Each structure stands twice: as C-alpha cells, then as structure tokens.
Image (cartoon, rainbow, N blue to C red; front, side):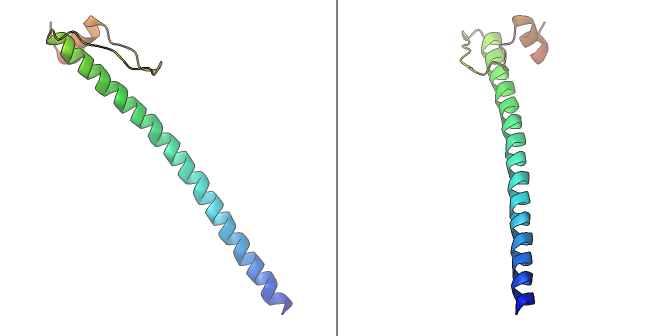
Length: 83
C-alpha cells in the first residue's frame, strides 16, 4: 500500500512540473509575440504616415510608444522610392 501512494505522489509531481514548465514556456512565447506585434504596428504606422505625407494629405502621428519614432521626410521618400 505504501508503494502505491508514493507512486501516485511521484506521478502528481511529474504532472505538476510538466504543467509548470508549459506555463513558463507559454508565458515566454506570449512575451515574444507581443514584441513582434509592437514592431509590426510601428512599421504599419510609419508606412501610413509616409503615404499620407507623400500624397499631401496632412499626416498625423498619434503613436504613444516611445520605441516607435515618426519618420522624417527623407526617410519617407527612401521608404517609397520617391526622389
């Protein structure tokens, strides 16, 4: 009887370790994806700003993320190959 309870405890510990490791890996994956999403949003905002600037549509820059900077006129021209 004593062997059965220690085996059950061992199995529960292995399951708990597996679930814990899975949660840690999932949390890391979510953090990586959030960073990629932020980069993608920044590039899209920069492209939209540049398109409006090139088309003389009075562009606005309402991005609050400090890591995403507003492109200069020269950067916009280079981005879309305009001289």
